[in-house]
Length: 256
Image (cartoon, rainbow, N blue to C red; front, side, top):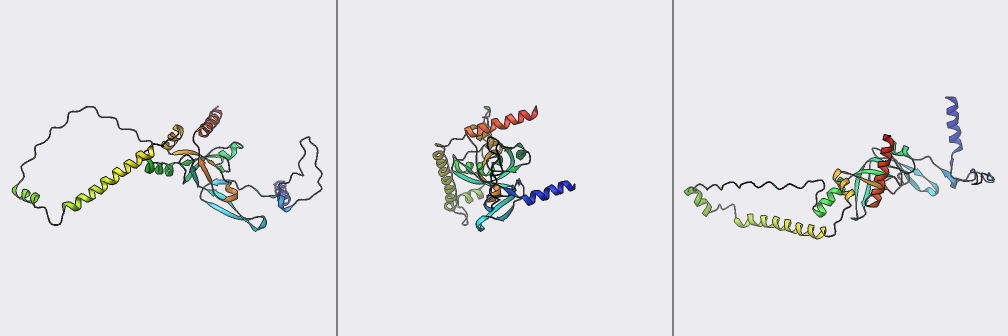
């Protein structure tokens, strides 16, 4: 125990440096240590941002500037490149990291890794913009069934006839009809708008499956330990196909 504590103290006193003078050359030769450590070459421990309730700390850096060190984050802004929109979505898990599988196991957020996010904000925008609902099965046509016989209306009483001829003063036919007409007009206008937008609508089949399932893959493009936020974009097309194959290979290897 004492040896472990002594080692920790030595590491803290030594500090983290980003210089290369202490490293060997490619041939194996040592470099001359003609200079001591410099302030502009210092390094800091990694933030190791986890998925959880947001927790961000400020760090004063060289020049009096401020960096935001995110220790916990649970959501981020992710763009949909083919549609040109951005929505805030919840991060559920880390799916793939090309450098370290330990970061995937511990759900650590770093730049350049693939995460799984909640697709609800993107799906809701798509439904309101194009009028298309994902994951909804088309209703099958009912088998031909005989139509029910029309019932003959019963003869109306004399008092009811008078009411039909002379409607009440509080209800005007004009007032009720305008509301119905305006609703119908808005529905027709929306249908025309949806048809016009659907001419250029194209969704990748793999991405459409993920949208219907409620979870999509996204790539992180910011450093949470430097800027304190997570920004990125959703994967689609060949890029999505590539990372799906990578994740399937890792799953099959883990099963073996």
